[in-house]
Image (cartoon, rainbow, N blue to C red):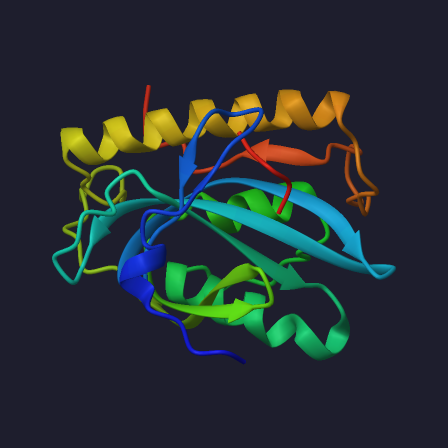
Length: 199
């Protein structure tokens, strides 16, 4: 793979159904899952999970920027989504191809991620090389991570963009792998607060 300068790509944007989306830059981030989409790549099932950055843990300015991570759902690749589930604090068995199961995992709260940027031809890959538990305080009555108002606002904006993306995608379909539950192809995750060219 070609070497890249992450600083040059940190502000890269995607445009489309949900409005302008700015991707996170490289480094350690605190992320909240806001939605998912099942689809297929070369006939193999994957699920894309969209995240909102609620804190740049290396002092950058990625609050409100987004990251979409693709998880392959083949038996040989399930270790990656299992790593994500453990890091977010989900330890029960789940089927990542069942929408309700995946939403339970996604709604557990924030997760830390180390993001690496690599160039592949004319495209930039945003790869998570490490998942880890968040270090935020937890409200003892709700067991939810305590996000501040700026973080809640950022999640709300990202969720609205995700809803716009799903609306755009409904009129601009691509082949999607159907989840085993109700046939929905995308969801709103996170739930912390009262676009684009397809990835």
